[in-house]
Length: 294
Image (tube, rainbow, N blue to C red; front, side, top):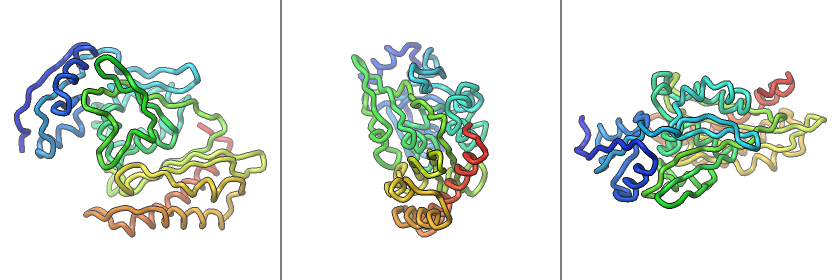
């Protein structure tokens, strides 16, 4: 199929882009990498009146350290650039590990970081990482800017708190804790497909190998990334032994309320979610035991 007719703009400055967004509001869609938007338009699942191509704007494709040791990434930065960035590998190993899981390298060559967040597919890796790590999003509009935490950005299936007239310009990943152990796992039908079920995990251990803190976020199990609320109470202050791992898996399975679709049943996602959470914690602890934090 072909997309419905639309008006096309290719601004060269941020101010020009914000003016267009102010004028056209929710009738406009941003074109960056196009890896999600164009298939939706070709299938006529999306039919915007106006397309605003932001690829000619300079200054939105940076990867830089922040004052507190975090990483700031411009929304127009290609996924492949993040994957290959030495700064990302050094300052956020979990983000670096997640990048090769995103689609195929051809998609990562063109797809953008901002596009992945704005599209907000619940099976995508980056939104789950943002919730897990507590990222902040810079949303610009004509005459102003607002900062939205990841916990408030994702509202539901492909729905975000980005308002008509706003443009996502930067994502800030907070300072990485050197003592953090981490893991990210997913199950997909083929390499590069969206996850049927996925988990991102971060934990810290004390000197006695007891859990100081833990956070687990599942993806592919609902309309948006799902933080496992019971994880800290199950793990905090305890040495991770087989009984604790079983309790965690059971808690994750019991907490998830996924939907069934043509790819997997709700029961499958619940059961696999618990298994993946257990395996992710085991992998994180093995990494910590070997002295590997990056």
